Length: 280
Image (cartoon, rainbow, N blue to C red; front, side):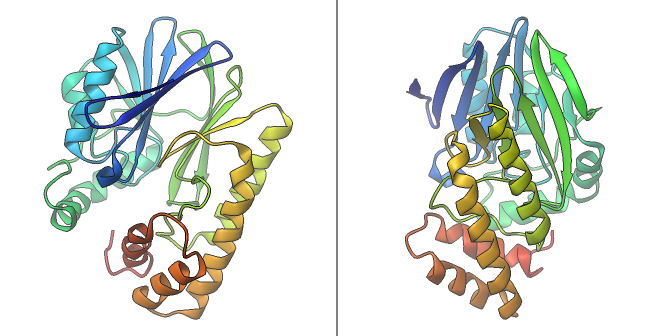
């Protein structure tokens, strides 16, 4: 079932007894998502979106579910997924915020200058100051409110550090920005092409175990059929990166290679990060 929030869009589905709500920001917020998992005694919220007004919209939707937020989990280091933590922490102050220790350290060291740069780039639409996760996320299996989760740490993918979350009973894998919908440009903001491809190849093994749904960081949930296209895209991006010494020529060549893909503006911005023009 898909419903319209005030600003974003929410897709709600029962995945073999586990209800998950996918909040998708509008286009101006890069279609960034937050996943809300219902448990026996509350909610587990993954990621907090980018624009603060979209985070307020997300918080309104969460509050409307009428269940306590038992924890918030941050998936990776990029600010389009943690800027909104400032809003969620204010609205749900009792909820602990979890992230891998490497992610916490990164935000502690770089968060303020990142937000300053993003507000300058996007026009004062994101948080003014970073909200740090206050609990370290442990890798491995955990049962939260009767729902089984498996947390995996991965370096050197779409970002320097990211989390993969499996829900074995729901047969859902939260891959966040490691996977993008079909015919969408990927965020190639770091040159981890080879290991990112290795991660995606390994994810294919989950399909053989019965997993059938991937929760992505930008857009609606997808199936495993998108992975091969993502891998082909990364191989092409790697070749283009090797052949081009500046951000502008890289972005043009990548967009020319995929003229029908959504997100040409994403490529322009990602290339500035990839070539160190914006750092971090």
